[in-house]
Length: 76
Length: 95
Length: 117
Image 1: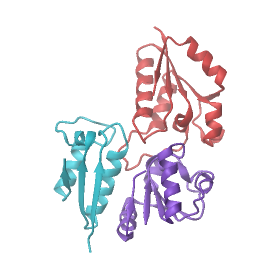
Image 2: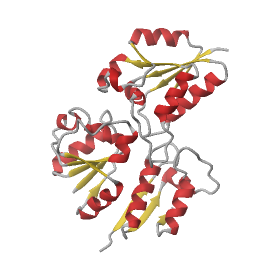
Image 3: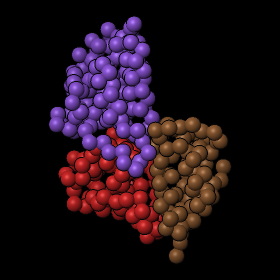
Image 4: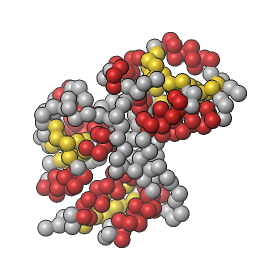
């Protein structure tokens, strides 16, 4: 039976590796049929701004948009 | 019980995570800079003797080889991490 | 143009400091400055060979470090930090020189500007 994974993301998108870790964990958990929530707190909310242009590093907008289409629920 | 550690061995956060896991007899997962704990005796120095898992992608990214790793430390994928988290009654972290 | 010293104190990938240090080192040499990249504390781990970025989406910082060297930056690793972090000579990217504390102090005295990451 699927479980629920809830991640707290509180850091800005491009200063720490946390963005990548959150994306990889959420992606795997969703693929395995678990429910996944991300609670964005403090600077974590910047991960969900539109028109991000990051290259050479996990693009938070692109990845989280893809995961939301896969079922990720995000709470700011 | 599972404790996830993302901070390096030279940080208070990383060491606190390992000591807490030891005190609670929890398994640990090492990711991000936490993967440096698999080098030398970093875990043993804090009294931790396993089991421990290390995220393979994060280890490879830093150029760390699995060859010298103690037997109780296992390489895992993100998919395996999710299974381990789902099997655990409690997941704490990330330190 | 002047001489700039970049000091990197943090290991790569966990945060953006290592990427920024090499980026600004490349920027400095591209702008005809004399650039020194000095690795201390966890920063020496940037010099570890065999970094594999497959499927991570990260820029490979070992490759970028080599680019810095090829473009003319001088790269040094603090000897005590190298020992503390368990790096052996054979673990390290070629072209990274190990320097002691007094060497590094002399380099920093000569530099016009210092940036710390």
